[in-house]
Length: 170
Image: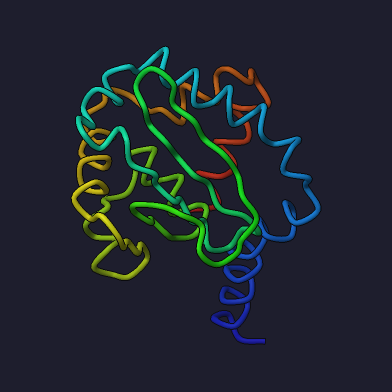
């Protein structure tokens, strides 16, 4: 097998790994974790939500295309919510942001440029593009990394997981 075929096979394996790992996960078990994540962000980074202005009332569909579910983010400053939903058509939302799990993670982490990802089609947006731009700008303006903040809440397991995901992305 040629080197490029092996590299392509490995790339495909890692790209599709989240779908395989998370497919059997009952989403009600994920919800308490998502609630903790969004509450921790709101508590530690309240400026993120305040920078959204009128877009705090929007529903963002975060679509990691290689996972068996999507996320709905409602960034209301006083009561932000993040929910996982199985993939289906017609999930109500104002704006959709789609890319692979690692692409989305690293964009949130500030490691990748959202504009460049959009123009290379690694990131897709539709719906209220102004809301997406405001969200992205709010994330870009933060000092440090939300991903590192969240990983630290889960101790060594969280930090190791993020380190592995960053290494895979490279």
